[in-house]
Amino acid sequence: MAATLAPSMDIVVSSNFERLLFDAYDRDGLAVAALLERFQQEPTALADAPLAKLREKFASYSVDDATILEVIRDAHKRTGEMLDPHTATGYRAAERARADQSTPMITLATAHPAKFAEAVVKAGFPGVPLPPHMEDLIEREERYTVLPAELAAVQQYVAENRR
Image (cartoon, rainbow, N blue to C red; front, side):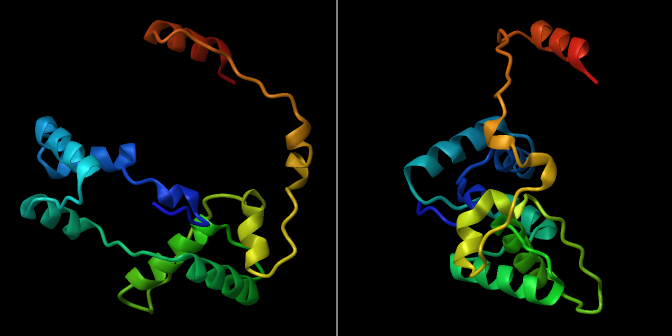
């Protein structure tokens, strides 16, 4: 797997994908486990029936780094908005998936472009500053709490710390 400008797109088997397969395979956990095991070893195709179910609901598109940069530049030129690489990927896929061009398309941004300075610079821009409320983000003290791997402990922590 080669790294891309959109690292979240580089994940080969996400947990969401496993849950999707579980539904496509009629909640047959053993079949999904076997499929994912094979997938780790060799290129693997889905069975015809589960694939047909997924194709009824989903379309997929791939976008390479050059296209991501093109979309970032084009969106900025047309709208003044700077897209992050993940949003650029989704934007291009949505453009391709839209069958009726008269239907409005809404694309939601998935991250702030400042998080992807390398891609912004490669697209030909000087960079994007962090929003004012995040300018000191790097200097802030990291805060976290280690909890035991027990449901009751997590529930208690959430109950005591909700806002």
